[in-house]
Image (cartoon, rainbow, N blue to C red):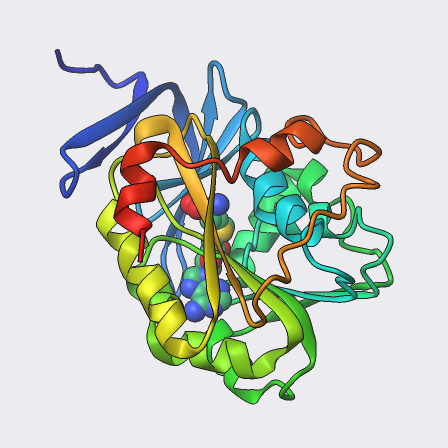
Amino acid sequence: MSLDQSWISEAVEATGTAFALKGRKIHEEQTPYQKIEIFETASCGYLMTIDGCTMVSTRDNFLYHEMMSHPALNAHPNPETVVVVGGGDCGTLREVLKHAEVKAATQVEIDERVTRLSEQYFPELCDRNNDPRATLFFGDGIQWMKDVAPGSIDVIIIDSTDPVGPAEGLFGLKFYRDCIRALKPDGMLVQQSESPLLHLALIQEMHAAMREAGFVETHLLHFPQMIYPSGWWSGSIALKRAGSLVERLDNADALDTQYYNREIHRACFALPTFVKKALAG
Ligand code: SAM
């Protein structure tokens, strides 16, 4: 079956899969880092793609943004200082700032155009950018992490594109070593870790690299995500100190969310057997 011009499709050669939405392109630009496109879709509102890969849609971004932030922030004993690496659409920053304990949240995005286009097409994701606790820094997250003061961050959230191009170094041992140095003793790192169904080998490699860098525990959490390959996505949490994944769910139900709640917090860490086996040891 082939699709006519009224469909937007993302075909992934490596996994032999494709995803399509009905809609039309309304903007395209090549930045020094990547090609950004904006589409107006029939069922998902606006859609942003980067280098042909789906990034964010109006309809389903809440799933990803809530799950990249709330499980980690509600598992950390006192998340005061949070850094989002990538995340230029500002949706993760917005969720982080919903936590009253957070005193400072910095977004380190390499491509300012992603944020400017998000302000235009996804203004709801940018509605906390003027929060006095927020800093929007535009630069390379890899270099930023090398330069930051040791022991200064509680939670690092790596909300990046796939591990190619400028994001490739965000998935490697060297970067994880810089992250662990930057974290306080109870610190944790969360990273988007692709699909458990399609990218299990990558998840295994990521967890192995995180442990090699010095993180003592790694945990996988998962959630549905319609616009990403397979419709099923994951985040990986790495802990600097053993046992610091606590359940601090006093505010879980009070957060203004659409997907995340107390029950989801517990359920998202429950692993299917094939994933459990792959990550054992
Ligand atoms: N939710 C998305 C996903 O999983 O497909 C990720 C969205 S977010 C828009 C990813 C961002 O990471 C992009 O805006 C990209 O510019 C940024 N990025 C990639 N490499 C980076 C780097 N080395 N430092 C900082 N930001 C980076």
